[in-house]
Amino acid sequence: MTTVPSWLQLLSTISLALALVSAAVIAVDEATGHAQRMWIMNVVWPVTGLWAGPLALFAYYRIGRAPAIAAGKMKKPFWQSVCIGALHCGSGCTLADLIVEWSVLAFPVTLFGSIVFGSWAVDFLVAFALGIAFQYFTIAPMKHLAPREGLVAALKADTLSLSAWQLGMYGWMAIALFVIFTPDTLSKTQPAFWFMMQLAMIAGFLTSYPVNWWLLRKGIKEAM
Image (cartoon, rainbow, N blue to C red):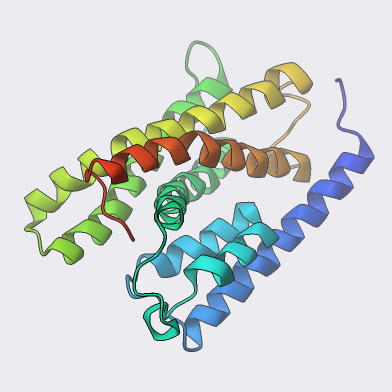
């Protein structure tokens, strides 16, 4: 496809607007009496809203809204813990994409002669750093770990999960950029690019979910 059709730009604009509204609704709800027990989840849920939009809003009110204990839910069903674990991982990837994709417009990075591959490499490094930080601030306080122990535990818990998320995300973006469109056609300044990124995050969630299931079953990752 040589150009992005106008209907897709309109659909993308609507999707992005709904995502911003969803993120804002979640953030306001957290700030007005429903703060999460783990402070890092106060970041995870609004960030999830940026790519999942109304789906994130539904998930937040269905399985994420605090305080769960006051509602009589002392322990979440396993599938819900897996879902939250995957979203926790994806929030670092989402923030990394926002930071890196805009940054490379001003400071392009190339890899194998491609700006796309260069941005993906930087994005992975930033996502990995943020993902480990998010995991550290979950595991260390929960298990009362020393900084070094907390970092090791975070690396064990999030490396596979984050890599699986990035695999799904990059897989979809490769299709969007090299099969459906071209890197020149699908510009980062267009709503359609960020709509494709929203879809990429959904793909990342799907590839990360079974990995998080396994990590939680094995006790490598803590349920949240």
